[in-house]
Image (tube, rainbow, N blue to C red; front, side, top):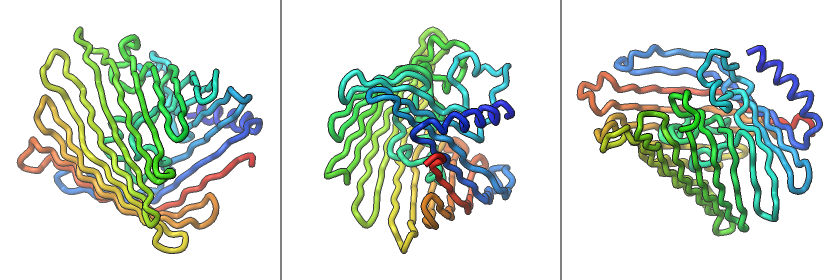
Length: 340
């Protein structure tokens, strides 16, 4: 932790030379209660949910950089297996340099910000009051080292990334952890309709078959004027070594937000997804989140959220393995340009 704090201080001193430096924070009072069958005890706490330092800088017309640091992250111990692969550092979410050899084309090198994750991940992490189990399994919060290429065509953008993914289990064999991701993001109807589609594949470092993990995410977002709606579909398949079946996670996530009064916004989010183990349904996720936000002032928001999270074990007919959590969040978000 001390090394993270020292690095934060160095970054803040150096950041004054950059064009864009933003600090975002969120703190919550959290109260969680669980059903008896889950075996979990309820609790209440006050927590720093999020603290991120964002840096962007345009070095010249065709050269720029961007980075984001998690100020709540603990340093990795020297004995951790994560140190073997070079890019699993939770303090640095991503840090990369982009070069444009020609108009609309960019090549990016470094620890890249992940693409994909549907419309859910297009929202700032401080504005999400629960992350769906579905898309969380398909979107790592920590980037991976490698390179990417993107091409912009008006309101449409295509991005491809080629990295060595540190988020897959068994990090001892980095050579078999190649990850490829391709994403399309487009705007239609004068940007009232947005579409995102991505495909990902990661090689697993197990056995001789070395079958990949693959997933696809499709998302749409529509601004109807009175409200904003978004819908994501995801399908992930983790092929078992030498088996004919696979572990799967698939489902839908729906979100909506609408202004309800002066500076007040109401939000709702629903998830319905399921996992399979060797072709047999295992877990069913039925999650619901409701929230209201108030824009107190520029860069300062107050929120109250209530989440009902349900993970049902479909293989247990007694229901004793089901986990139900009711979660209350009350807190504030602050955003600031440090050197504006």
